[in-house]
Length: 412
Image (cartoon, rainbow, N blue to C red; front, side, top):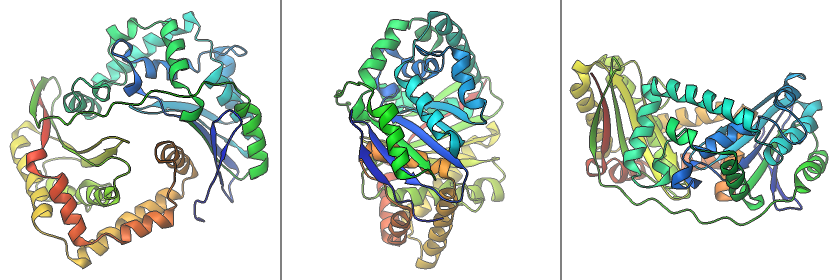
């Protein structure tokens, strides 16, 4: 696949268009990325960003809910959306001939939604079912409850779904106010990955998005205050013990971010040869799976390691995890070891880059946060430049036991 070069334009109303031409495919991907998420909610608005994302699909001023849902489905396309702590995205996948249909629909649901009261009442019930499903999923729930402790009294600690009580208190007027406050022209990226020509795509983007009157501006987000390390336990009705370890980490623009990404892959990335998988699953048989993740935002970062195990092995598995971490902190990798890990990590990146769908999200989010997008060759060069000493220095800085916080779910 050729290098992901892209063009960036500013439409008449201030929305930026990121265009990437794809080749040898009959499928187009497009999405509107908005710099608005649950961290932008006021204390009495918890759950509102996610509710808004749901309600965008429940009817516009020219389409009812069924017309919205059928608009792309009838031509074999898909329309979807998601909400995170700091982003909302409405995106579509469609055959090339229907790209204009997809762009027009994304514009309609994003800026012309009617938020009908009848649909709002129904959608609250749907989200309450989503909350119940989430509460039954410890591998998701533990991350959110950890972040409540890690970001105390800060919007980043709030659950994206909110609680049933908080959800019930939200109104149609709240949706309208939040939409007007956060859907700002200068806080949006329209990303399109398509074989359709650059000129044609720009013309369609200007027609459907550039002519939409939108406010600009927006208030600055407040960065979270570092939290004192904690070791928390919670009783629950799950059969296993679930453990999450977390450390403060680098924000998005930090120069050592690629090194920490590589370190995460070495510890418990998707490869079955990750150090924690070999120790916990293959050698000791303590867990079915163990994973590390690195969440980086513009003003903060969080590095986590999660696994579940039988309660009899909880203490022993935690000790084993810390021993693997300590080994990386105390002993630098050899050049040969690091070269093998780099090759693996780069291979995973190249394979992931084969998906134009994934490229759309990386491009949209990166341009929204950093106003730039590193091409795959640039990212691979950054990985190649990492030295054993740099990797160890990041391990020392991030994975210090003095910075360690943890949350453990204990079976009743």
